[in-house]
Structures are given as C-alpha cells and as structure tokens.
Length: 122
Image (cartoon, rainbow, N blue to C red; front, side, top):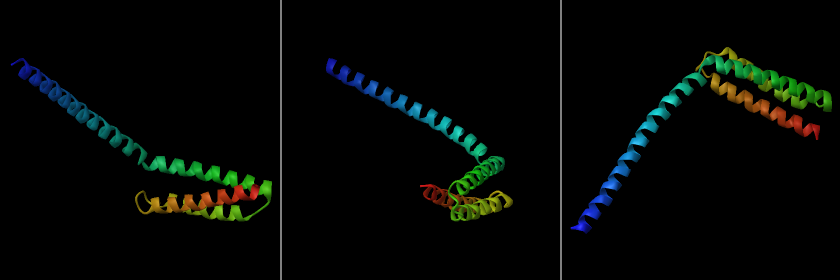
C-alpha cells in the first residue's frame, strides 16, 4: 500500500509539473504573440521605413563621397549612386506596393558600392 501511495505521489507531482509547464507555455505564448503583434505594427509603420531609408541614404551618400575624395575612383560612387537612386524611387512607391522589393534591391546595390569603396581604399 505504501508503495502504491508513493507511486501515486510521484504521478501527482509529475502531473502538477506538466500542468505548470503547460500554464507557463500558454501564458508565455500569449505574451510573446501580443508583443510581436505590437512590435510588428510599430516596425511595419510607413514612417519607420521612410525615416530609416532616408538616414541610410544620407549616410551612404556621405560615405561614398568621402571615399572618392580619399581614393579618387569613381566606380564605387557610380554603383552606390545607382543603389541610392533605387532606394529613393522606393520611397516614392506606396507602402506595400512593391516598395520592399525595390528597397532591398537598392540596399543591395548600395552595399556593393560600399564594398567597392572599401576595396578601392586598400
């Protein structure tokens, strides 16, 4: 009988542990989903995209300009300027109207310009 009680006690503790883990999982999932929904709404706001892209374009133009002054090669600036132009074009598109694709394309071309800028400086 004592062995049966000990076995039931272990099963009860196991059941309580599993229930507790389930409760923590359910609460954590609800909190995480609510946080992600809030962050997704904030990060997906058009103003965040516009401000971030504008800052990236300004920093990119300054960096490429300084590079050509230092090393004198125009190819990095030409490639980077193409990327900046595509990024500027993406700012003119409506949010969700293909602007993400043009933003990524422009950022990729600008990154190539920065890479060429770094190689030219070596």
